[in-house]
Image (cartoon, rainbow, N blue to C red; front, side, top):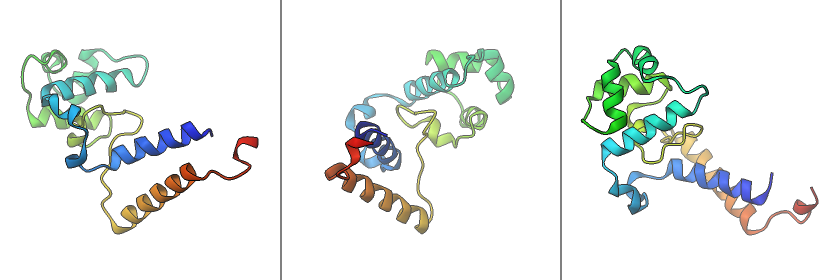
Amino acid sequence: MSMRTTLGFFASFEKAQMPFARLHTSHMKKDAATVLAENLDRLMNSRPPRPSQKAVAQKAGIDQKTVSRILSKSVSTSISAVEALARIWELEPWQMLFPDLDPKAPPVVPRTTAERRLYAQVRDAALEFAAEPPADYHDR
């Protein structure tokens, strides 16, 4: 694994763990409808072949017009529709509203003391590695 790959992994891991209050301000310029539309589109593209709006609607148990309206940002939607769509991709509803959702690494919130401790250890190890990789790192 290259240094860039390692640091990229850590950056995405850290971003997923970052509290909402510390998000980059450029994300705050997008309204919820835009974020939801972009994330739904990303999720639909995440597993080839891309499912049709009708297939997504059927799987979620909602109307196809609702999926269309979400994607076109033409109307606000209900929480129950967001919940139904989130279930398709095994996400929590709040994750559907997280700016720039990465379908392969959705954001998580450490919930237990053990999870917070593990995150801190991974963060510290990545920072240590970035500051001073092993001497033989480039020979691998």
